[in-house]
Image (cartoon, rainbow, N blue to C red; front, side, top):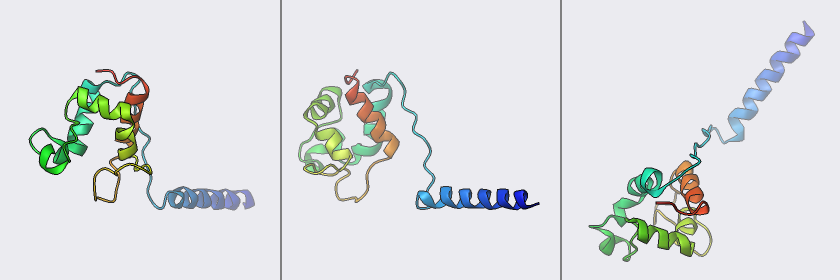
Length: 122
């Protein structure tokens, strides 16, 4: 009987720790494919998270002429370190999305970082 009570206490404690260790947020693990390409993964993420200001028809007005809507431009930003610095809100870079106070989805950041790390395949 005592072992059953101890087991229940351990389950309750473990549940409590799991729930509150992430400030009440349970993050799903990110899936990052082995072969990440601009065409298959990255361009869609850029469109979803960045085109409000960086789309071809608005970037000159909203994004200080920073083009990232095509492969050569995004690759140039990635090579300079500005892409990763901005989306991770690293010191010395302008945090993106600008003036939103939050980063883009953490899984999207991981995919983009892996794309840069593995050679920025088109």
